Image (tube, rainbow, N blue to C red; front, side, top):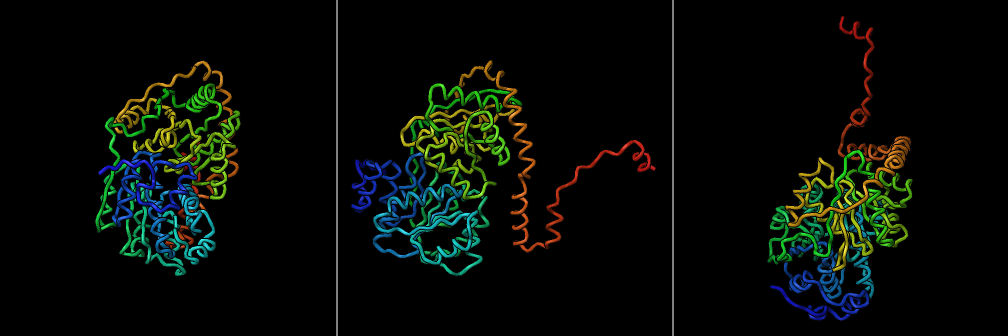
Amino acid sequence: MTTDCESFSDLNLNSWIISQCNSMGLKKPTPIQQNCIPRILAGDNCIGCAKTGSGKTLAFALPILQKLCEDPYGIFALILTPTRELAFQIADQLAAIGKSINLKKCVIVGGMDMMVQGLELAKKPHIVVATPGRLADHIESCNTFSLEKIKFLVLDEADRLLGGHFDEQLKIILPSLSKQKQVLLFSATITDALDKVKYLAPGKLFMWEAKDESGIATVKELDQRYVLCPKDAIDSFLVEVVRTFRSTNETGSIMIFTDTCKNCQLLSMTLNEVGFTNVALHAMIKQKERLAALNKFKSNHVKILIATDVAARGLDISAVKLVINHTIPNVPKEYIHRVGRTARAGKGGMAVSLITPYDIKLLHAIEDLIGTKLTEYKIDDKEVVTILTQVSVAKREAEIKLDEVDFYEKKMINKRKKLLLEGKDPEEVDLLLQKPKKRRKPHKKEKEILNN
């Protein structure tokens, strides 16, 4: 059933919520809000699926806050997200709407002090926003808080949370929750993983999926392009794409996605060296630095963000006008989430994917999934040739600097800690994590001795 509401007051929301929405410039509810909010208020479990930028966060935040103010206690709701940055963003949105009822919320994610988080949980905040790994750690390591009385469980980006990556953590979290809770799942892409909701939410279930007669999985305001380039010159083509875009759009922010933490850091250092000021966001940066980088980008102090897929989900930054896929994602569904960082809430935007000869099959898989063909983005190949040497030298210097700081040291420390917590023998762990030494080829004389 689809309703057609002109304002939030048509959804039986309290006047203070409507006032807060008006003060934030939100006048008319989006289709997912129109359909899901009344059913959540009625007590139904809910699955909501709509394209990125369609207002999914408010679709669960508003009814939760209304129910909270009717019967306030902590911990009232638990919201799980796959990434730390998304957790902080949801918490900020909740704080903005719940300001007038003195909403108490806390964010439980990795990379932050566990003792401080434990104290926050012990104070019984109304809403906990968490990533599964860190919340599971708290459940196993301390008994200063309880989730047995929660009224709502929300899985934001549910397809990712239920896709297998977080199964071990969910096995720890779910048994600790109230059996009377409402379960709300929201995602931009529906997958087979959402069948798991049957065991999460055995009660009455309402499911709403945005229907698009065009059959296109991305929003119509998004201009989707590609640039064909050789693999060994992909960074130079990237620079030229940025330069070409900047020639017609001097102020719009740009998000560049790549595949690994190391490539993300290298690309960031390289672009900074050739004059494109940027910040990087990936899993091997300290959490406080990740938040600082994101704040610089959100506040427009820095107009280029280079990221791995930790930034592909849910982040809502209205100034983003261009998304570039420096490395095309191996999973076509992730393309939808990446390009969804622009052309949000009815605004225009562009996505450009750098395609090497090795990526043609992936490109076709993405086009089949989204139901549309990408068109070519024209750049000047002669300009690429002129900057090729400069970009190559800058990247080589970045590689040398990265080797000097031992980029993978932090990763090894975290891996060691994890193995020790699993009960592995310390000596065994140290042997396991030793870097393999490069074997020198034996000299001719040594070969003779070995053969004899």
